[in-house]
Image (cartoon, rainbow, N blue to C red; front, side, top):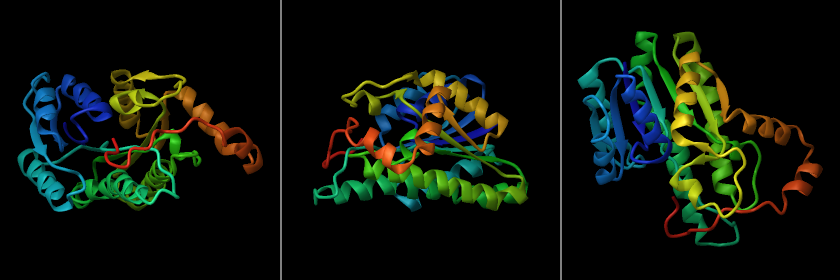
Length: 255
């Protein structure tokens, strides 16, 4: 089986790479940090294909995808796991560039990642596209307008794509992580309930992909939290969430 993963040099992408490599699959691993990507691959069993590319560079991303397709033939799973996060405030003019960077990386790069694979998967009537959303996208969180909105957009986009591709037997799986132990969450200055190890997340995510779950929250406890959040009327949600802890702003370098 061939698996293409973006954001593979760290976090969820690296954990997914470790999992699929351990299962004996051939991987196409893409990330912008070449040294870290090489360091990861040195620890993986098997022979894999590396692409040092920023997912926001659409043409370079497409070229990497095309190269992987040419090398392995049919690609079974494509996981768009590249993502960044930072606190944002609309009144801070510097944060506009952060909004743009977050949407470019989390939303538009997901589209760019899937684009080269969709025609082949439709023709083969086989394959699965995996989008990484977040529990943070269930409802808007104060101080996280860009991140919450981007992850909400990923969920809705993947739902549209799932319906478009269903007649062609191509699966679209949306995975919404809760708190996973990664470099991104390490910067959160607040408690994180049900914090899950990244490698445990990867195993559960792979099972969800195999089952072709249309949408799943990992860990399941955060799925319960998400359902409660979604069901709350606005007046009650506002009262509970208005003083929620906020992500730190980082206008120079969102992670």
